[in-house]
Image (cartoon, rainbow, N blue to C red):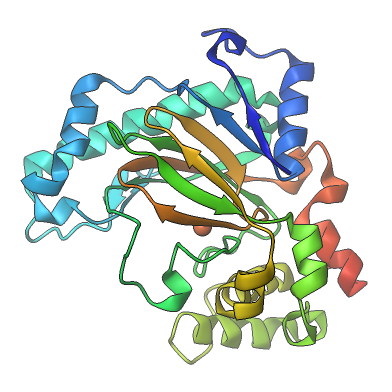
Length: 307
Ligand SMILES: [Fe+2]
């Protein structure tokens, strides 16, 4: 695994990527590579950048990481009681434009996925990542793979596209070895897939994971989702994994973009401030190398279907 640099000359604006090239990019992502754009292919108007970078001082309610839900055109993570309505409307418009611009770009750049992805949340991340005071399972500076506690993907892959919009500082990541190696090396019996106990245990396990202690019947988690959530927690809580696993540092400069399957590439954010991000859930049917998907890897380990 590694970093695949895509120079701006390789991007012909307004024209779809060649189908063959697009499949090759998809294959690199599915193999665990990061696709890196030294100069972002996403147009973010200078006025929007000024607004986003000014939030630290301007409105305390906009300091926190804020999610944007494109399908309902809504922001979340705001304190609506204290937020300045004009600033919120402006941020909503900026996030809408950003989300649409990333979708436009990836619709051609990763054309094999476009018919079979679900647009998930976008986010604005204005907080300094270094030294954040978060509970262990929420820490971003520990290597982990992503899983959503309340939104099981049922085998869909979590693809994330990032922009470092800080004017002068890098966003500092480390990444680990690909999922297949990590799952085989570090998944002990207690976190291995448990298809036989699926429905009830998955709900209870989720309840514990989110600190509720009880089953949550409204969230239907497959054995796959149950494993991915427990694996996320296991990696963060495992000192041996954190200490011994190979780590590859990457620093993403101001003005750059990158994308990666964060459900399978162990990653941690050590430092950086001000980023934009858009998440896609890519259906297993859309993958160009489905045999390498985490679902297939886990089903091979478990010897049974997990969805
Ligand atoms: Fe993450």
